[in-house]
Amino acid sequence: MDSLTGKLLVAVPQLADENFRQSVVLILEHSDQGALGIVLNRPSTLSLSDLWKQVTGHATTAEGHLFVGGPVEARLVALHTSNQWGNGEVIPGLFITYEPADLEKLLANPSAPLRVFAGCAGWGAGQLEGELEEGSWFIADAQLANVLTDPEWLWRKVVDGIGKRVVLERHDHERLPDDPEWN
Image 1 (cartoon, rainbow, N blue to C red):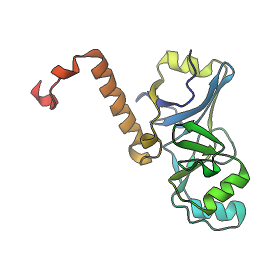
Image 2: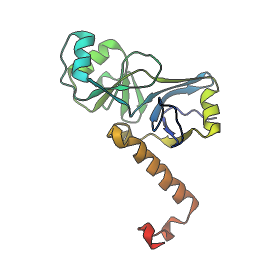
Image 3: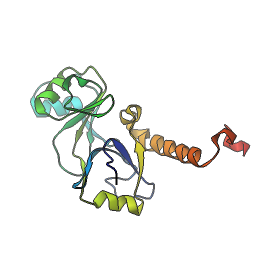
Image 4: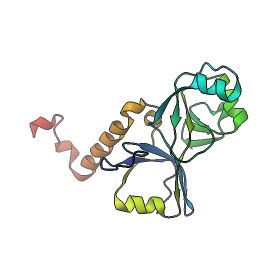
């Protein structure tokens, strides 16, 4: 299987695991040894301001909430659009920061959209491939607009995009009416 790094895993509607029900996961690493990703649409109730005071004792003007990146315990990471303190580029225009000193600089001077995550999603060798064979996930291209969109609607937005893509790939899209009621 080709690497899914930089792709989205989108939970199928039937996926019952509460950690991943209606989740959208950005894959950060995928190889023969396994996969690592971040659930994009699980905001917690903890504000970034309160989090940062707890972690560093300093204030931040960053708005929003901490996100739960998955059930596996991991250090804090941020996804954002500013390459100034990015430790790597995940997809074009989206950067990840995980080094504590860079996170501190990023949160002290939030000048671009960002999300901060605690935890991650992880799969051992062959585990993700097995889940894909079982039909637990759709695969979609990660787009910057989707990654930082309203988390409440992210799953539906990506699923709708997958549905449209499937329809357009399988049908003569020029013959499809704009309004489905015209069928």
